[in-house]
Length: 158
Image (cartoon, rainbow, N blue to C red; front, side, top):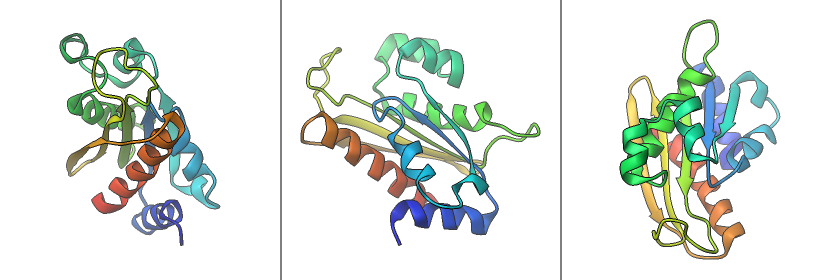
């Protein structure tokens, strides 16, 4: 069983719902989960907030944090994961799990951080965790690895 399949199965066992917020992965995490049969039972939806202002407007990321550190920061990833839980809420209840990705896939860095800098986060009602990585490779491989690692982080959190 693949990791996305395991994630969908685990969420189904728990009766939990999922939201996904993506920046550098541009929908890859969401697409990977949607590829799993039965994902509609657990997946509420997702937000691709590629532009910095959308991270604040759609996901509630603190504008002061974004101004001070930019969109590629561990606390931004955490706030994105927490924010997507609220954004995809159903019946007034937040999603049980939020996954978020932010980083720099390259080939150049707009803010001076090294290409391959990635921050992933998972948030639940019990708390959140962030994983910061330095991935190697071209743009496509960095994005693919970040998406895979985000799913693995969610599995570890559950």
